[in-house]
Length: 112
Image 1 (tube, rainbow, N blue to C red):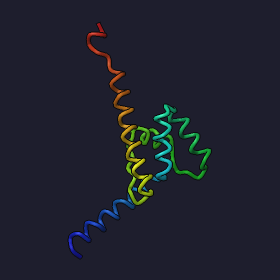
Image 2 (cartoon, helix red, strand yellow):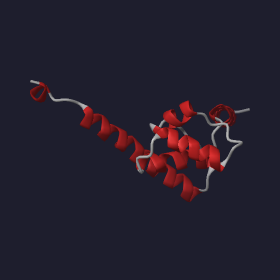
Image 3 (cartoon, one colour):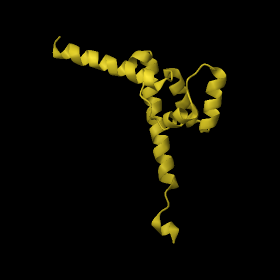
Image 4 (spheres, rainbow, N blue to C red):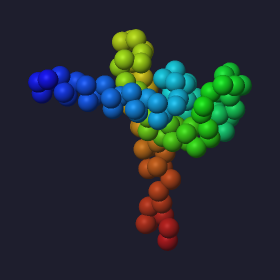
């Protein structure tokens, strides 16, 4: 086995392991991102996901983690267009939280 085949196999193993560990479907991640941008609370998102799919393995903590944009989806899980949409919406979620973090900071001149 040459080096490129080894690297490819290693990436496949990692991708499989991470998908299994995540235990959340790619479409559920996109749904969470969309609802965060609509300013839904994470508990409402969680309840909606459970109502839509009672067999889902998602829990409240995972919804909170994913809602911060912290969830990697692999290109093999979605169509090319859907994956591009995922990348765009993930960037929007990052921007949303960074802008929210910046607005919550108190300037030293305002504190006095």
